[in-house]
Length: 394
Ligand code: 13P
Image (spheres, rainbow, N blue to C red):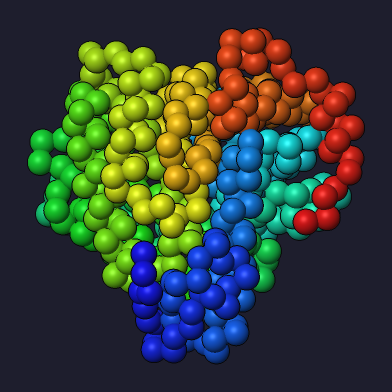
């Protein structure tokens, strides 16, 4: 890319002032602050983004909304109260040795204000243990008017003010999820257009607040479509989202893409091995995601835990990706610990072992070294606990 100018409110700086630089001196961008402030802000965004996809590490998505976490707890017969939700998130975040495998954790509005039993705010606890705190900032979906079954993600009203508060509370990155349903005539042009613009405005507002946006256009697994249709839909979705991000002057070097894998629908009769899934996923990403993006993370989307890990491993083993690839799993990291906990204090240690094991398997997958042996050999708790007693001071 030669000298391109992304102007926001007019004042322009060149990335040659940017210490992050990515080895380039020819990219320029502009923000509504002085040149030195702009270059420092861009460098901070780029460095946080790179930390989130550090080698062998991925993101724990623990940002379930009140209704989603309540359903997950109810499925284990655990009542959903402010205290059970806090205790559950404390169990996750205080897992010994977690930062060996986990770079960042995405929190929900309630969670970012909660504390450990020792009275430490969760974002402060995470940061002091080498895990970057982040926050989900969308406010969920509403039905897209005129397009039954399709959704529009809300949450832009008041977002600038909320972002300032989240940064004060310690967040360093944000997440916004849009969903796209594959069906007869969907995703519609209306759904693609509206959600792409909302994702882009969210991302630009996040960067303005010096928060790294995780841009998540999720192509849902629901449906009976085959893998080829999924690839086509993911292609058009990514294209529309990156068009909108560029139009909105989002700094690509200071964001992360979160995406689904290219898979057949949940009700499809097609069965593909991990290599075919990895090939389709990487072909689609290579065609539609600029190399300037510092990292791509995958959501699990309802796959079972081991399928998600095995497919991630195949994707990360495939050569030729210009970006670091990793995971940002919710269910595929939390299914085990949630079931093991069952709301009881005496199960906390076992639940933390379940989380550490899943996180270590996914870490191996990011390195492309996951196998049946990794699955069978849980990380030795003693080792991880010993390491976890040395906060990194990040
Ligand atoms: P799943 O991995 O459960 O799909 O959740 C990831 C996420 O953050 C969805 O927004």
